[in-house]
Amino acid sequence: MAHVLELSHIRKSFGAEIVLNDLSLSVQEHTATVLIGASGSGKSTLLRCINLLESIDDGQIFLDGVEISDPLINVDEVRRKLGMVFQSFNLFPHKTVLENITLAPMKVQNKSKEEAVESATKLLKRFDLADKAHQYPDRLSGGQQQRVAIIRSLAINPRLLLLDEITSALDPVLVNEVLSIVRDLKSDGMTMVLATHEMGFATQVADEVCFLESGNILERGSAQEVLHEPKNPKTQEFLQRVHQAGRL
Amino acid sequence: MSERINSAWSPSSRELERARARKGVNRKQAMIAAVSSIIVIGTLITIVVTSPGWEIVKKTFFDINYGREVFPTVIAGLWINLQLTFIGGACIGVIALGLALLRTTKSPALTPFRFLATAYVDIFRGAPLILIILLVGFGVPALRLTGISSNVIFLGTVAVVLTYSAYVAEVIRSGILSIHPSQRAAARSLGLTSAQTMRYVVLPQAIRRVVPPLLNDFVSLLKDTGLVSILGVTDAVRAAQINASRTFNYTPYVVAAILFLLITIPMTRYTDRAIRQRTSAQNAEGAI
Image (cartoon, rainbow over the protein chains, first blue to last red):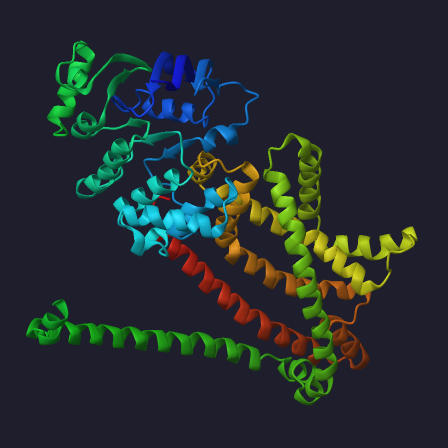
């Protein structure tokens, strides 16, 4: 199987604070890589670096074998191959659900309006949001907004989907409707990198779990290995705390 | 279900008691407001009317018959103000948008224009409008450039447009800067270029946000078009001035003031409402 994403020796700091420290990771096609770790361990920064929303200080990032950390690369072209979903949804409040989804296909991929609307409608139907197509985001629940945000990122047919703690801003009842979409995408064979605090969910979808601490991957392996039989004392301590918080 | 419960509901005796008490409090407050208004406004009117010069003021400022006589010339002048406001307003909108975009761009090719736009805004926002009107109105014809009209209405409009473009550019720029960076991140992560992000995501939200302050500037623009009268444009202010200096009766000024107020007061009321709606909408948006 081919590597979709390859990170090698990534370093990133904000001023004096080192956020990513010599981090390497490779992601194979059709797999889900789950990043876990405490807040501030570098999960979000890592995803933002992959999407070139942040520049890295050292190391290399390859997407399908092409180095995207090259400063001369066209960042817009790279981002067309990457879908990103944010913790705070970031839907465009002045556009309807349908317009949110069709904006990038029409403006970035130059699809006709009919074509864009047709595939957007298909996605909305699939995820039970067809009746919301003409609503504005502020009329939707948090779970519905996040599902729309996922659909919006799917509409550009990304090679790789980056999900940044997509359920952290939702109340527990709404978490599942969002996670079930991700499960569907996983069974479709979508390649994903996701940061999450939902350990149960991580167990269900992860092909590989990486535990991040102070900007590096301390432990990696299958969900069973990392989440249930952790070897690293720091991983054990983290999972202990998560368990006490009732999230496992 | 809840409707049926509501229709069957009749207020408890305690609630009726509270409603009576509330009514009593409201009535008392209305009484206090009425009495205090009568005292304050009555005192002001008494002071003006009993002042030693009141009879003369009444004759020179509030001569109804003379007011009727000059009304047509003043309102013809006001038409000039309105034309200036709408034509000028359209030019201001276009120039200000261009300036705001130049000032917020990071494109290296536009660097010199960014500096020029900043200098432009500094100069025209900082200098009194009346000076700009005088400098443009008397300075430009002195250059004797061929092809540039020395029509005072045209030059007056140019001066107002130059100044107001700087004001409005800053309002639009503040709107652009107020859009949360996460909106830009979302748009860029979908592959939109920075120009597309500005065009489809940032600008529509920014303009919506600054509509109330823009309406405010529009009201000010209408009033400030009165300043072009110093170039000799026969607008409402100038028309009133001509009449007043002919007869030494100042009623035409009062007529002009009332005509301006008839337009500006509804506009400011509308602006206030727009601001209120904007504020409540922003509160509803919550963290975004």
